[in-house]
Image (cartoon, rainbow, N blue to C red; front, top):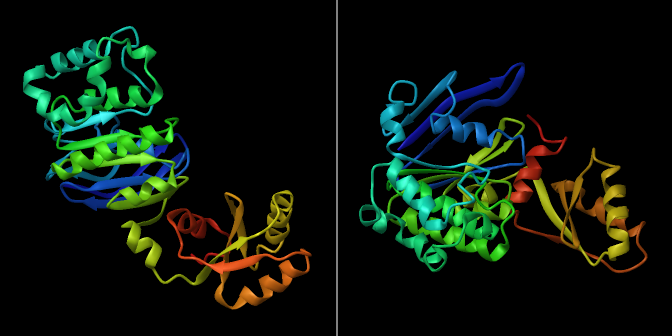
Length: 306
């Protein structure tokens, strides 16, 4: 359905996307996972034909974004990162405006927008500027769906949205996936990666890893993933800092009230005795199955071999 090969992009002297490649099939959700500045928006805007493709290949259903951009745009729904609808218009008026732009009507598109419009209909006469963050995002998604696109591009659609609305939003995306819509979505939230079929971990324009969530967390890594429980709250930042004074041996980062550590397989005992010298109370070190955030940190740490 979509193929990207060796895509690179520069702004002036700054390389913002470095040789990015990925493929997906119809009805898959692809997640671009990474912090601000990772290159996610640039990738989505180029797929959407809003930016010129300078290097590499991007094809959608065999069509090239350079040559066939007008036909490609008929197949796309794009939701930008910032809310860009008319705040002084109601929900219904915004939807009607986008229907007019696409030459469609409510009767023609009601099946396409039904899974999300049910959340909006009770408030259809409310001004968009008066909506909550979660409802604004639902409205923006609904407007992107009025032409029943086969490829949906969503730029950080759940940023700043409360957890309940985030979960509702992803449930809606799952509904469209089951209907055969291909979805490209960017997010800084590592926990959302598990809801994707394919994820690309990105940082500073570089691709750290690509695969399904299960593939990434079950790979055989050269390092061990541990969690330290039982450290007093007033000690946790101090201990993390002391552990990271020995970054040549291991790397620690916080996860809630715990410290997680990435460590070579043969240094676990050495870590235990090091912590024993720092703490005069009981704590627990456990081996854990890595999560997506652990894999992301694994690729960032200094002792990873290139």
